[in-house]
Amino acid sequence: MTPTPTPIVTSAAEIEAWVRLAIDGAEEKLGHRTEAFLVGEILGITDWFVVTSAQTTRQVKAIVEGVEEMVFLGDGPRPLRIEGLDAPDWVLMDYGSFLVHVFTDEAREYYELERLWSDVPRLKFTRADGSVAGETDSPETDSPENKS
Image (cartoon, rainbow, N blue to C red; front, side, top):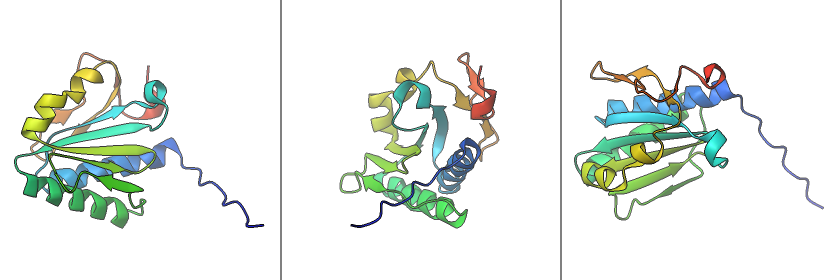
């Protein structure tokens, strides 16, 4: 009989740190309009969605590589799976506790994830261009513990 692997318990603070690393990786590769949505209480299969955009499919691939490298170098996990690299208008990186969606501008406009998740808290952070993400009329969060 093979032993059952012990599940890895990850704190909300550690997951948020990885989400911030994913954001940094996307921003470093010139991802724009980056947002992070706290979807765990509504969705149940993951805690966070990170959404970012690229102007070209080549840039989508560069962002995916940048996110993977930044999270891993920050002692985070490797993605469990990456989907969409064969037609990179929308690439999904599944880290289990968070998902990273990298869209071309056109695909992002089409799918409108911001509209779908407009009622969930967003992570506040300063983007590479100096703008602040997470400033909306919906509930906001600086961390999952500070949610209203």
